[in-house]
Length: 221
Image (cartoon, rainbow, N blue to C red):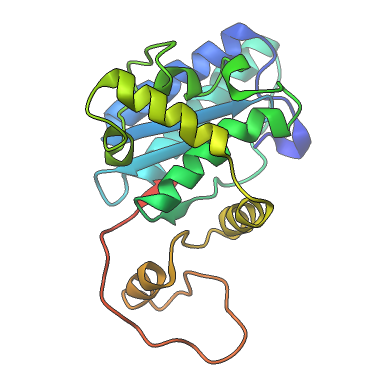
């Protein structure tokens, strides 16, 4: 996010340069980029790092590269970002699909456009077959939408049209803001057993019993 709401992108060249930096840093740090939304003062990504420190190195490199470019182009100095990036682990399956919906509707919620298909600077156009973003790697949950590209694009459109309830939207926003795990109780309990740091917002009442472990999640920023 831009420092104190400072715009990160002033024109088309800025957006395109950010694309280049995302691609370069993702390849360098072995991070798979599944989805993105670039707003005037925000960058949102869904990624899977394939090394332990891949995400942090990618974001550090991305931040430094873009600030250097931006300051040189606009003859400015100092910071551009509003602070350290925030990230959450997302459970594959239903919750990752909800994050894709959340990402696609960010432009309309920020008044940048009315519908996802009208906004150029997100991965929506890629997954609906209207553009090919070569640096994107479709997550397994996207591949599972259909057996052919046309079937996957059609199902993706239906997924986005379905949207999110107000409760789901609020839960995702609060979880990402707090850097908590986004998933069901079983997934969260499994990850909680592997760390002493709390991974989800505490619930009122007695804690539930831990149960069997699901598959690992995907990082989103």
